[in-house]
Amino acid sequence: MPIKEESFRIGSGRYIQGKGYIEKVGEEVLRKGKRPLIIGGKTALEKTREKLEKSIKEKCNTYEIVVHTGTCNEERAKELANLAKEKDYDVIVGVGGGVICDFAKLCAYYAHLPLINVPTSSATCAAYTPLSVRYTPDGKTVGSIHYEYEVDCVLVDTQIIVEQPVRLFIAGVFDALAKFVEIKQRYTEDMTDYPLGLDYAYIMSKYSFNLLNSKVQKCIDDMQSGIISDDFEKIVFTTIAATGVISGIARGSNQTAVAHKFYEATRFLFPENTKKYTHGEIVGVGLLLQNHFNGEKENNKIILELMKKYNMPSCIEDMNIEKTDEAFDKYYNKICGSSAIETEEESIRLKTSLKYLWEMK
Image (cartoon, rainbow, N blue to C red; front, side, top):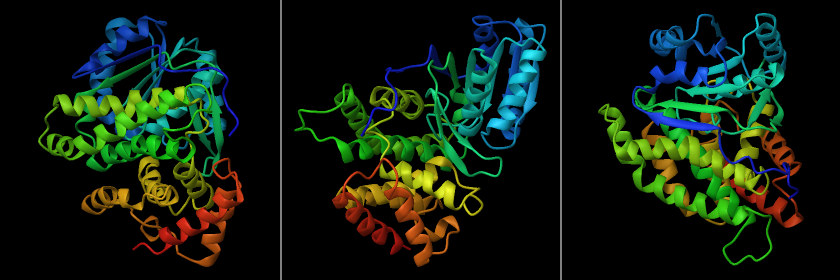
């Protein structure tokens, strides 16, 4: 596969994580400016607004909070970028889940301003990675934009993260597990010829994969008891920061394979049907497909157990998509036409794996 990005954008300028860290947002703003435009999701701001504003007011005289409830789309991002320029704001702060963090990156890009992301869930590594997945206003994917520079700061308050719904936590685990499973489509341990850095991405993603599988249930138990354990801190770091590093080292190629192309196809083909499902939940269903494609369908056991235990989608029908021949052909053609499939043998294998997914109930 061709390299999509020449540079290795491996980290954010600053990554800080700990209990009660929402109170440090004002300090972080002062590292980059003093007039923040804060963009947040409705639910995220309801949970954080009091402490967020207190922190900002202690350090900044001028700020504005904008609630964004739509998709990560170009039209609204440009509007808010123009607002930032008109009112002389000098920092963008994104507060929310993956969509908001991606959207804040897009706003900061068009405004030419530094960015601080404050994720309120660990459902994806979106707060950390220097790219945004863009959509139309009605939710159809239109492709990713890769940024030349990294996110300036990611601030993670684990007190907020431990209160997220369990399904969001598991969605983040699925998204992180996908890195190793997808890299295995293109890389094996006996290879001698591969893109620079991919071996490190493989080794790191393998470590994350084993860690996540061994700790996920304990962390769910800790969450449900409101305990911010060392294991929980480690898994949050893994799903947000380490997964973002892996993506950066892989440089966007040979890492995004069938599982994420399944996600992109789903959002493009059935945006209305799947509107209520998160990125990680759909990637999780894509993982079932990817494992079969890799010849490792036995690895789906723990994924399916988590999906069914916590009422997450585990098959096509669970995502409100009717299992018709037409839908099958749409998925097959969309994924086959992507960078995930390179050879005739892979296209045949994809069809077999889609049939396996189609038979799941």
